[in-house]
Length: 382
Image 1 (cartoon, rainbow, N blue to C red):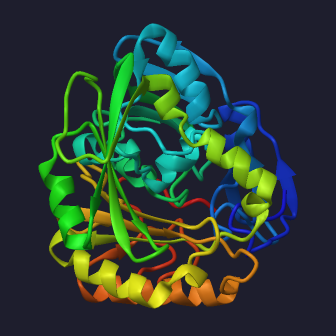
Image 2 (cartoon, rainbow, N blue to C red):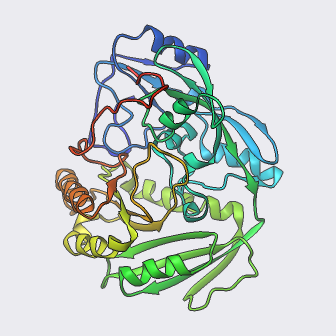
Image 3 (cartoon, helix red, strand yellow):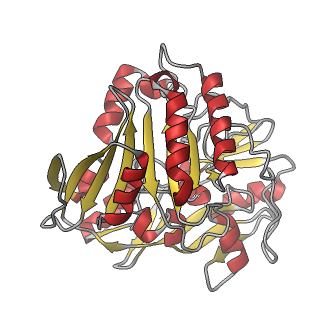
């Protein structure tokens, strides 16, 4: 297992281990004298789930959905969000926050934070965790939650694997709608889009900047009650919730067919304070252009709330600004895109924003590569 979705960094591990239980994960951590890095489906973009001269833990063997109750699901960290949804939807339940792309692992997104279209309402995916099973660097399997081993619980959610490996999660569930109604609206400026995102009372809110024939901003608002209406939409559609949750599948299949899915993806992602977001977005897009984004690149602009995830560094009233770049033929090179990401990070930092550290760039010089664990938490993974 070499490389990742980013297609830029390729590190060769000394050994790859495919554990089938939490105990096997703990045994590897207990015995290792070299770095140990967990990996799911490798959807990171700059080697975050790779290791040179260390042990790579392929977590895909831990993928069982153990139990579904009306208010929670118990799931192994190597299961994908698609597998979680396949288990919960027949019971009329869904996780409150889903990734746009469902074929990433639960453990991977919880270790990063996990942002979705409902994050403005519910928070990030790491906010939805009721309890975790963690293999600590000392080689112990520990349960943690807001009531038990709280310091470890706070350290591993969005902790990027520094303080242990998540092996199982208990996640909150909410009633799933049978059908939803989606509305699309257009705006001329980033400021107008951001204002509308705060104003429109929808269950799912997301935005895109379109760089084609003139810059424009498109808002998608989705209501879980298909009887609701939003004025001013140029397009609306009613569809089953399951189809909406899996809306990226046709696009991914087309990108695979075109070869775009296999190209380098030097994504750049930051969290901006809402009061300064429009200026950063418009300045960045003015210097980007279609070649800086690539043939299949996408610009996402989404408001979010982070309720109680101390390890996820975000400004007050955050807006996620993501340039999901693809180094297509004729586009800027991967190196040029990574350099543009570093300029974006610096621009965000100057206005009080932060980098989402799953994107494509070297470690942030303003953030320690290894942070000390909170008092009472275990030491970081070796």
